[in-house]
Length: 81
Image 1 (cartoon, rainbow, N blue to C red):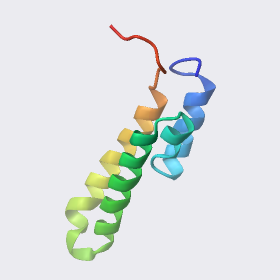
Image 2 (spheres, rainbow, N blue to C red):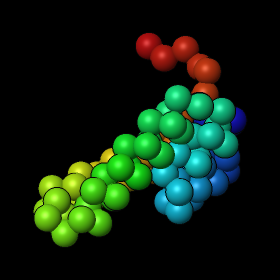
Image 3 (cartoon, rainbow, N blue to C red):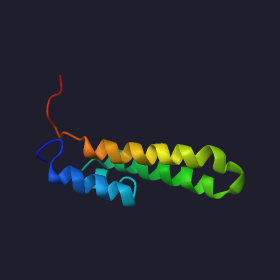
Image 4 (cartoon, one colour):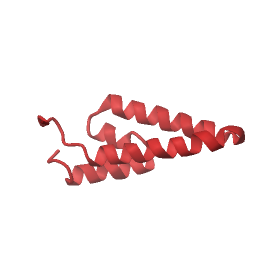
């Protein structure tokens, strides 16, 4: 990846918009991809039950947005200080 704001990060963010974790997978971050796919999927599945909707729908949305932002802000293997 060329860095934050690069075309690869934009594609990863768009991938995460449609399937949480897909953008992380494109970037080669397997654990992040699994985490967001499982957590967001579980939250949305639990939100599908009408009783748990009030708690898990917003929680799933928060994690979904977090996954998109995380993919868009990824800087690669640079040393961060």
